[in-house]
Amino acid sequence: MSTSDQHSALLEIDEYIERLFVPSDPLFEHALRDAKDGGLPPINVSPNEGKLLYLLAKLSGAKRVLEIGLLGGYSTMWLAKAIGPQGHLVTLEVDEKCVKVARKNLERAGLLSRVDIRHGDARVTLEKMVGANEAPFDLVFIDADKPSYPIYLDYTMRLTHPGSLILADNVIRDGKVARDGQTDPLVLGIQEFNRKLAANPKLESIMVTLLREALDGLAITRVKD
Ligand code: SAH
Ligand code: DHB
Ligand code: MG
Image 1 (cartoon, rainbow, N blue to C red):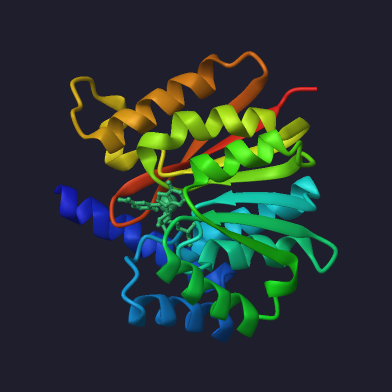
Image 2 (cartoon, rainbow, N blue to C red; image 1 turned 180 degrees about the vertical axis):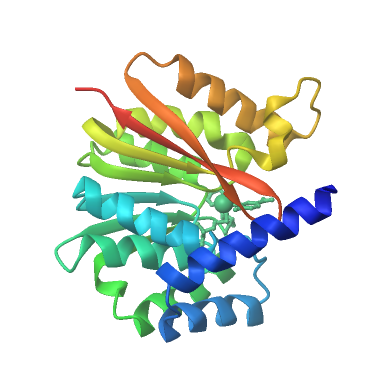
């Protein structure tokens, strides 16, 4: 099978799973449409990955969630839905245009009251959060600029508690992470993040591959007791 045949076979499976388990929801569709119309890049999690985030949040019973990388609020909507009306989600975003689009999407979906959008460079916001001794989060979803992933992991360690769940998107990058001699700073950042995750004795982790435009993956980590 050629690479493109393999890719279309995988896409067919991805669509099959989506048809069965992620029935289309007008609010989620509307959010993606508005992100596109607003000129945001289509780098949101896929519907299937969104459902996976939702299920992981529910299974872990998370009530306090931190998201790093909001974009148009698509993944935010999945996580906010999972934590219920008593939940609280803080999401960090540097791009003002994203903040505007996402706020509208969350408002339309009736989820804005449980979401706290913090505009600014996440590295600065996280430093402030640690400095302010903010209450720890039950779940952290890392999905912003890839070169900063190792720094985001350091902050995440200071903003979680034993039993917290840490999720990180885009940890496979079409398999490039598995090959030496990479020069792309995005891939290098992820490679360093993956090594740090694996080496941290306070964490237990695995990665699952997911189909996007190319093969990518989600890291799933639990902070040990
Ligand atoms: N979680 C979103 C996708 C996030 S894409 C979803 O799945 O729907 C990555 C986002 O991170 C972009 O919106 C980008 O503007 C933001 N970002 C990049 N660098 C950042 C930084 N230093 N601080 C905060 N946000 C950043
Ligand atoms: C990119 C970022 C993402 O969060 C994603 O899911 C896919 C691609 C990127 O910056 O290339
Ligand atoms: Mg991503």
